[in-house]
Length: 427
Image (cartoon, rainbow, N blue to C red):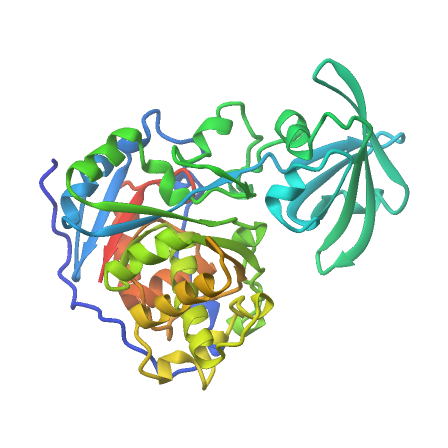
């Protein structure tokens, strides 16, 4: 292990609830200079050889990612997001020669991911459309060859939903599923800030080694550093692991364009948490180390779902999704004595009452300074874009010390964003 290099001692930051309304935070206060050359365009040849910045109780040091288990305690619970990135971009060419890109964001009909991928004739998705002005009407066609047989795939544009549209896909081979079509003819949607085309290598490097459940249009990038070697070392160190699912939407790349974050709308993202994971969280006192901001958002959403169930035991499935500003409302659970274990138990009891093996719902949660963390006690995360909601999430966790962390990373050769290096944050 590389001896830690202590940078600047900083005062310990606790989870303090601010009185300022987070809706009026100015996103310009969360800016920093990020030269293009510091953005990692490709991953390292060996994932776990990336650099690891450690922020622990106010001190900053650095190491190699393979040393991560040394900074965690025996019996700690790490929670991973096992979502898998789908090849969500489909390309069609009109008879005029215009190239139309259809970027599948989330399923509409059926709206369950697994069922949609199993469709054999028709599937409808909410999509972003590239070169929209060239597709004002009509049906797009693409001739494909699947499993040795010809197939015609069509796309028909439907109603507009904000900046996206409904698109109905149909094909004339009942032996082919929509998952087959995406897998064989879709393109992996790497982040736009990489400013390059998707390469064949991205199909492997832009997936975590533990990805399982198809549905994301972006990788949970903190997990890209983990290898089977690191996971085995965590097990040997007595660090426990659990998984949940949050399908990352394209909104993760959406910049905050409003002056105050009140004007930024978070997209709903699908989450799934097994009953077993809830029990492990309860057994660990409602405390966990989150791998990535997607796991952070899911874990913290569980608290608010549980608190809502305590206040409204009769709540139905549709009532459980977490609204963007729900944690900050005057009746929010931060104003009550509901602890994390009690909230998690309420979710577990809800599943038991309804004979469910997992919680399936959605979250729009925005975590910004002023938020009180309930379940996440530490996190592994990459270095995020300036003026992004992910940087707000980090600031809510460690306060203004994020500035010292990012300054250290810029001055010490760390690589930024999706394919970049990582950090372990322990307030």
